[in-house]
Image (tube, rainbow over all chains, first blue to last red; front, side):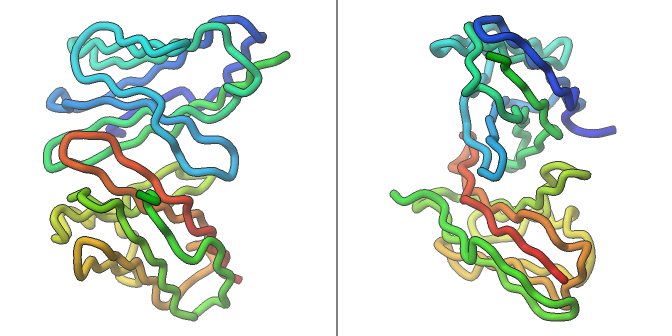
Amino acid sequence: QKEVEQNSGPLSVPEGAIASLNCTYSDRVSQSFFWYRQYSGKSPELIMSIYSNGDKEDGRFTAQLNKASQYVSLLIRDSQPSDSATYLCAVKKSFNKFYFGSGTKLNVKP
Amino acid sequence: DAGVIQSPRHEVTEMGQEVTLRCKPISGHNSLFWYRQTMMRGLELLIYFNNNVPIDDSGMPEDRFSAKMPNASFSTLKIQPSEPRDSAVYFCASSPEWAEAFFGQGTRLTVV
C-alpha cells in the first residue's frame, strides 16, 4: 500500500470554477501535511501546509484535513488557467521523512 | 538565501559512465532529501539525511546508487555505472525540523 494516494487525473474545470483535489494517506501517525504545485519542467513548490484537523484558507486556496478519515484535500476557488499544473500531496512522518503522492494534473480551461 | 542549489542542471552521459549529482541545501536546514521523478513512477524518495547522517536509504534502487553528505552544506548522489533506465529528473530538497521541504531546480539526467 502506498503511503500517499492521489487520483492522477487529469481534472478539468472551467475558468472561474472550484477545483477540488483529494489525497488519502495510510499511516495514522503522520503529523504534517502539504500541498505542492509543479508546473511542467519545474520543481515542486509549496502552496499550503496544514497540521491540525479542519480547514486552512490562504487566498483562493483552502486545505482541509480529516485525520480520522486520513484524508487531505485542496480547494482552489475561482480557478485560473495559470493554476493548470500537477498538484502533489505530501505527508511528513517521524524523523522528518516526507512521502509524496503521484500527483493530480489539473487543467483549467479558459 | 539562494535556495537549494543543484548542479549540473542537465547531464547527458553514455551508458556505463559514472555520474555525480551535487546539492547545496539551504543553510540551517537539518534534513536533506534526494528524489527521482519519472512519468511512470512519479516522485520517489531515494535517500534522506538528518544532521548529515543517512537515516533511510531504502529507496535507493540498486547498489549502483550511492549518496554522501560530508557536511551540512553539501551532498552528492552518484550512479556508477549508469544505465539508460536511470534517465530521470533528480531533485534535492532540504527541510528544517517539522516544516516543509524546499526543492532545488533539479538535474535532468539522460543516459544514452
